[in-house]
Length: 183
Ligand code: IMP
Ligand code: MG
Image 1 (cartoon, rainbow, N blue to C red):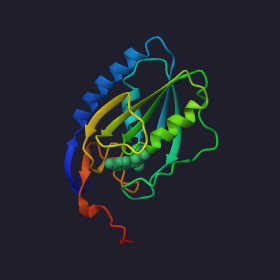
Image 2: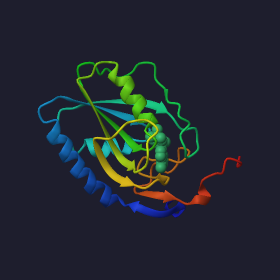
Image 3: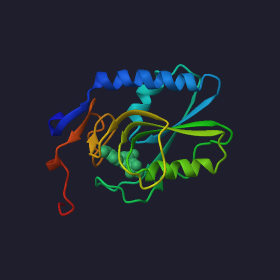
Image 4: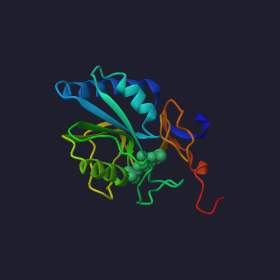
């Protein structure tokens, strides 16, 4: 599987070291406030599991499932909430966890939707942030790694639902990405 990568950007020890730092930052910030984490599935699954075990606070965990990609490597601009009941966020301090901030369409839609339910605060934490212009105005409060505008997989990030279980984050070889004409 790792041979499908053009290059590794962040290996497992590097990711885990960064998670130690992020966890310490978040722990300090929510020391005196009850934190509710909302993990965006499926991409944040591995990130959330490793990050949250480094946060020694009595937090609550909920999940949200959305789809904004339909198999390709660019966003369609449409965000579908896959579950009927959204997590209970009223009166809570919310931290949204997601794998990657790319166009911003997904996180802007989630933040806007949760904000209508009257949370006390909403912050965003992403493992990876692409340094590029966003289609929607949204920024992350906590960022694991900044990268350029390239397609990455691993450590939860997928290409067509594969590569999530790679322990590192890397750039997928161009020939592994199907062209729109391939079937
Ligand atoms: P956005 O709405 O364009 O910010 O994209 C958000 C979603 O697109 C992420 O949660 C990922 O599932 C997916 N995505 C964006 N960029 C990448 C990437 O480089 N690799 C894998 N998935 C990505
Ligand atoms: Mg994805």
